[in-house]
Structures are given as C-alpha cells and as structure tokens.
Image (cartoon, rainbow, N blue to C red; front, side, top):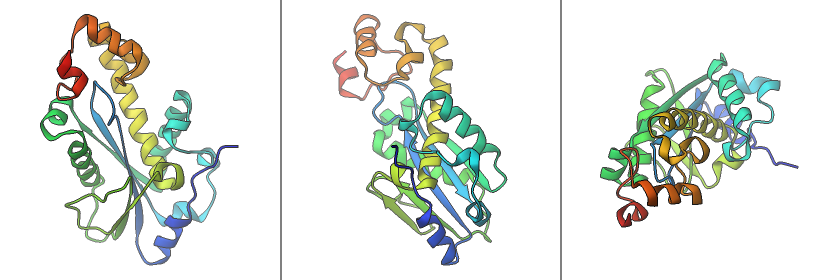
Length: 213
C-alpha cells in the first residue's frame, strides 16, 4: 500500500498563527535537456478544515502516472483555497548558474509569482536538504518532503505536470531526440540519440555528458 503524505505539519503551522502554508518543489534537475521547473502551492487554512475527495490520494509526482498527475494538477489549480505558481529556468540559464543554483532562482521566482501581500504571514516548506536563501519568510527544508508533506507533494505535481507538457511541445520542435518519451532525462534512448545527432539548443551543455559529446 502506498504511504500518502500527511497534513499534520501544515495544520500545526497554521495553529501557530501563520495565515498560509506554501509547499515548494522542483523537477528536472537530473535532465540533460529542457528547463528546471519549480512548483509552489499555497494553502489557506480553510483547505485543512475538511477532506477533499478529489485530492485525497495525491502524492509525490514520481509515484503517479501521467494522467493522474494531470488530473491532480487541474484540481490544485482550480481549488478555491489553493493558490499556485510555476517558475521555469531555461537551459541557457541552468548552464550559466549551475543546476542547483538554477533551482534556487526558480524557487524565489515561484514565490514571487504567488503575489503575497503584507497581510500574508506564510510559512514555506521546501523539498530537500537546504533552505532557499534570499526570502524573508520563515521556512523549513524537509528531506524527501515530496513523500512526506502534502503541500510539497502538491508542488511537485504542479511542477511535473507543467514540465512534462513543455517537453511534449518541445518534442515537436526537436523530433530527433524522443523528448515526448523521456522528457529530457538521461535514458538509454536519449543518450543514443545524442550520440547520433549531437546536442540541440534545448540541451544543457554544461553537463559532463554533453561536454563529451
């Protein structure tokens, strides 16, 4: 049986007086092609006051099939007690910054796009080991947070659904690489196509495999 992320941390934070809880997660870090995408999911207290049947089995995006991710992403995006944002860091910027710093830039951008006001008092939950530098709100990093924390799992779904849709569109512009199948990850098919065709403008040329090619 799949272990679902819990909501207890979010409820505890809201009980302490925070006006909302924000989950942050990124996707595409290990890819050879395409952007790093960050999802941000802001939850109001009203969300945790009841059960939402259509979101009950939401979990880490990596544990969902594509059609499940897309359905959950639509539910999150349309929910009246959730605000969401997605930020994209494109390959050229990933090469300039390195992929880790690109993810931090994406997280700051996603937070800005939530449109927080002075009346908001958010607490930010970040997937991973490190906090996001340069933000003014209190935050906590949670290792494997996308498996444990509902708000972070929701952010992972938003980011993954958005990025996958981007990669399917890119596959039409760069048909030689099979992007619609592997979404830019270093699969055997992707590496084989790179050896034959070389990198495209979509590829991250700072990565070791791309440098060798």
